[in-house]
Length: 105
Figure (spheres, rainbow, N blue to C red):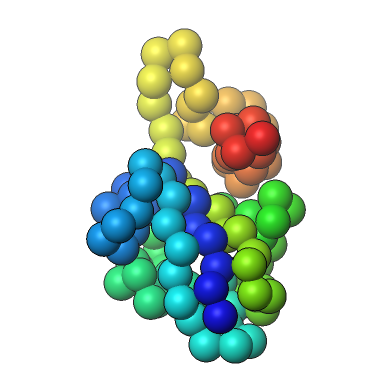
């Protein structure tokens, strides 16, 4: 089955050839999970900090359907006046997911 993948930050280095910008389509077996997609891209699971499936937060073991869109985001920090998980008073996972949702939508 084919699924769309959107990668941010260091995850972009693992996109397959033929990707456009930070997006690609990958072929995985029926019933594959987000973890299977990450593995098929040759990316280490430890690099995945936040996952969205079709725009909603999901665990890395989330099963996928044909045509799903998987968004993968690594940990991030820094940037003067920009998004910064390192300096936010909110928990990092909350900050990152809110920032990711803004970027995707």
